[in-house]
Image (cartoon, rainbow, N blue to C red):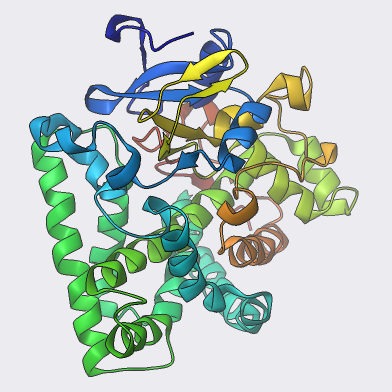
Length: 413
């Protein structure tokens, strides 16, 4: 099967309004489907677990657009494609291949070792307790509170900012930058220009601040590498590495915590089983990552040569989306009830954190944060309830991120 014409490609919803339903529709069309991303960018979307896993591990699949995306030279000719620059117009672990990917990954990996993650546990517990106190105070009047802005977001945001030494005056702009990159609902040139402007101002401001005020943080360590051995980390790579590790370090955990809370509140019987100990919190985290992965679709990977998967040929130079949501909901791998949240199923083989050399280095930290935040929340507020029907919650405007704009709850202390 060769690349279909433009008219036969399936456009992905830039708002990500119903990612599960969209994944099912694509799956019905085949194992890997030609799609268009916001702005009309052509790509291929794997629709099943085995297909995605095979492509992630295939050495013929690259993440370097400069070397392996046939359309990369045309980016400047399509203003409506500008939103993708936040993903492919940068040089970091998400946009490099081979030795460059290995080099950049090794520079960051020491900050996310199991030992260093465990050393942060006390800080996570302290921040969690502070946020729970603040939630209780905010809900003292009896009205609903937003669990996302009051708990799921500030916990990982505060922790990653401490880990990378982000000062208070840059915290808000850093969060706004990541949110803008995740927002795929606006493929206009203005939105793309805003993202590029923020990348060019917020990150250099952080580097300048930490250059003048070095500390025991990862930004300071990366600056030292740049200054002492520019062959290992260029000035541009420093900025773009900070972008990916800070963004991935909090945005994905925000959605992990929020998605788990909503899933449990939507199923009181399952929540009761978790709170009684019949189902462990580890299983809750894994099932959340399977059914509601924090990143639904990650752009982009590229075929180095023609690749035939399940009878479908992806031509060399074509782009491929990493479809974590579709993989997690694949009935061929997880059974007929794959679209149901069931923490008892033990789905610890999900691909939401990646696999092999592409496994997320921040996975242990994200898991530790969630395993601290979730039981603490339900222990503190055992009568916690959603303040609206689950169907009324709104997905963040993104086909990349998988999470809620707000999570209004009543604490019922």
